[in-house]
Image (cartoon, rainbow, N blue to C red; front, side, top):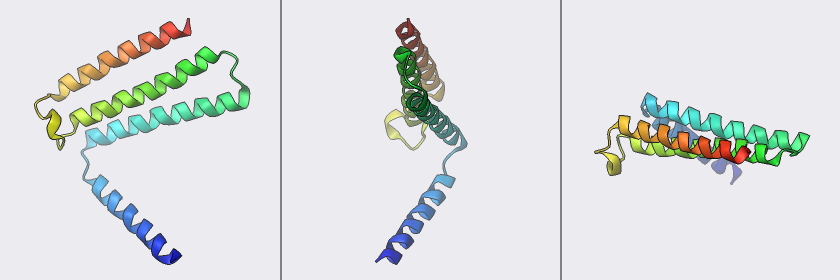
Length: 115
């Protein structure tokens, strides 16, 4: 039973890796940016757990900034993906402009929250 489960997992990983190899480079760059933003949020949470959360507004601002940026990047990835038929009429430049504008609004709110 355990042998077939591990072989199923290896088969799944191999199929995901081969499918991801066909992903365009611009989507891989966005994926890397999302992973970086989430990793930064995790590092901040671990740091808060070790050191403490004295300026709690700063901790919340940092984590919400990372998570919000990752969510906006996922939205950008959805809009830029050529296989997504829902946004086929949306040019990539417009999607990137939306991403930049929403990031600007997000970070203005985060700066306001800091005080």
